[in-house]
Length: 341
Image 1 (cartoon, rainbow, N blue to C red):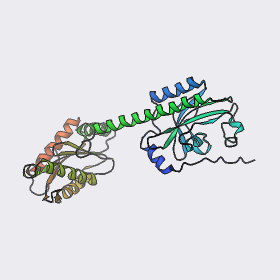
Image 2: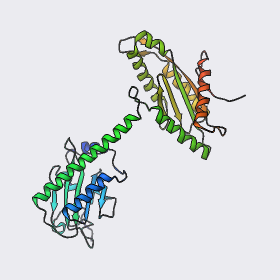
Image 3: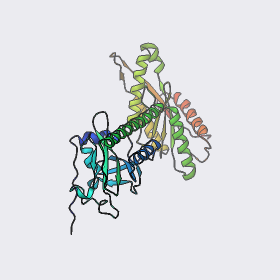
Image 4: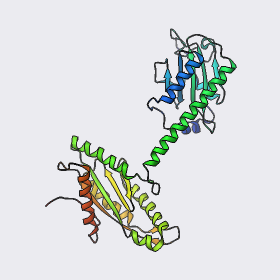
């Protein structure tokens, strides 16, 4: 005999709710002590063998933390929490799941022993989006008092505060690695990517190239138009560089008017093609907010990994030498380090 498929309600603001949830960058993340502490507190407060913090994705309920539950996620189709988030601000309590028509075909209700009791409070952000639930469950029917409903709702507020705190910490971490003027990576992240790529190349022999770049004529703009104009030029150059590098390459501002690229899986030919595109893109006129049109050039020095390269410092030294040579060229402003001839 075929079982009737469960139907779950969808909030009216579902599209916005999913965008809000994904802005927290939390789905499929590792366990974290503040969330595990909340599930333990919930189980202890209400004396239940099961407690969980579940976040409702488009087709699944994923558990950020769980106690007494042996799965990482459930299909949304068969999730009791789907009904809880549809209520947005109210606690959903089902004293006996077997006696509720909405859940009589729930796969976990039909197990032995099966779920009999559920109470879940929506985790609601400041804009009113229900991101998931903090819930408790039992294999025995229960009666949940009004005071217990309020306590569970308080725990949902604490869970939302933990999510907000987690997101702020991530944003602060990203800002620490980002140049505030251009939005590019800082040198620390560039150095880290270069170290990782070098170790990988040493193990596998897979080629990669580092590019060191320096603007030509930037000092004259700072002196003639002021530092605010110089900042405009740096932002525009950063945008143009971003449009030229490949997805997966690491582009960074190394300081002042210096930039760098770690070109992953990039051999010499690909790097020289990239350098040519960069020189062409950067050399186009830049219109300042004042209406003045200015121009800068860029010189590019490149060094490709070879078996003789023993360290990041050695590779950067080669790229710096190639950059110095590129600066002395009248027309073509890029140069690849070729070593001793």
